[in-house]
Amino acid sequence: MASRLADLHGPTGGVVRLERRLNWSGQASYDLANPRRLASMYETVLREAAHPEELAAWLDGPTLVRLWPGLVVPPEVRRLWEARFPELAAARRPAA
Image (cartoon, rainbow, N blue to C red; front, side, top):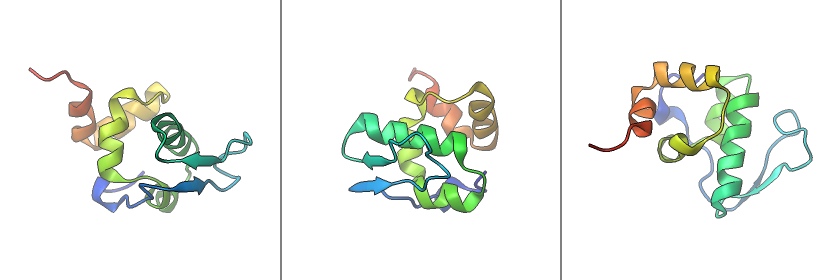
């Protein structure tokens, strides 16, 4: 896991292709202008990344916070990330 969301400086635009180790399903190309493909890439990286360097290479901190409420990730992944980064848990709460 990353130590700070500010350490995540992944791509925010264009078409990217995840390495095979992260995305072995054959759908490794992601047009980041397409909101569904952007979310899908984040979900894949959050599930499959094994090293902080992979997270930093593919995820962007502000984008992660923006997408977080709608991402479909395993409950344990969500718990771990929200425990480490309270701003992610806050992003899921409805505004008062």
